[in-house]
Image (cartoon, rainbow, N blue to C red; front, side, top):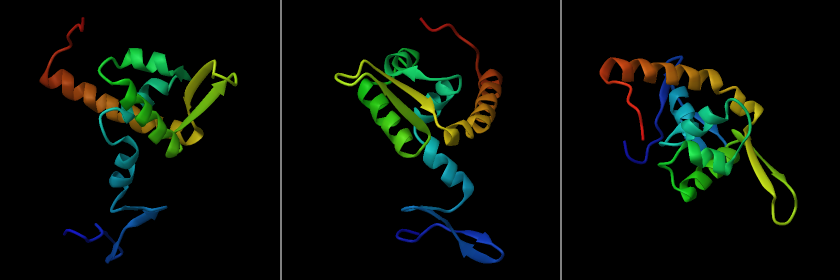
Length: 131
């Protein structure tokens, strides 16, 4: 299927969603575009309760590099999930990230994914303390 646009069948016809330059073969594909990868959904999860600074997010995710966190924040901002607010002019005294209204609409999805993940982890593993 190389070179072909993935499709879904709607009303007996092959179709795909086009959003800007992206082609999505189903709603799941469109959703995973926003949270794909290891860190985007974690960032959204932490921002569900309000704005946070870069350093606060980094502290909550010690395994992410600063470069990767910066790239993920920029990607989420470009997708309209996050808003970035700069306080002060030169140099910026403080930068805070928060979910946009569009990002807020994703919270029920993230909660469902999280609940499923907890159920899975509890049934297949155990809760451990991280030092």
